[in-house]
Length: 259
Image (cartoon, rainbow, N blue to C red; front, top):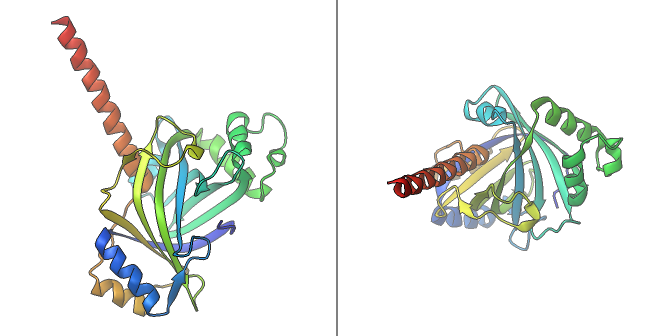
């Protein structure tokens, strides 16, 4: 699944109703410009579960929320029904001047967990058998510098399309966006709480240069305004709101007992 290790592209995001997603998806294949992503099922569909990291003082969260010119994230990702022995990806996602760079290395999920527990304390990072040792070193440097820890699991279903003539063009639709922070084992499957309305879909257009004219015109006809959506920040906001609600409920119960 998605074996490329280095990406550089522009990513344009839209938040659209589920019904509009279905209409656009049909149109994308009907005009012959795009086809279903080869890494998905027969319709380009697959599931993604990611473990995101942050520091105790939320450096990553605030970099993203404040839209710093340069910002980055670290995540551990699996696809579909993965087990502890399935391949996973340790990925650094960086954004600078609106250009997205992704660098990731393939690693068995069990080995990824071992790395997160021990880091380089047990010797060379190559002992974890990453597909790209250089990127593994970058992951370790980033994790150590920011003192990153597992923070939240984010999951969603995706339908993806890629260009027939333009191989760098991708259009993805993410739905069933859910999160959890009480169980950070990604092999246990999708999250338990929606952090985006289940009737909405995050659409992304991913290009190396500019969006083709035919696609821009189609999105205009479907009245799709650009809208920034951070899956990481939105899920963190929801988890913190839920935690505050639980604490408030406990405090109210304690007060009632005292009275």
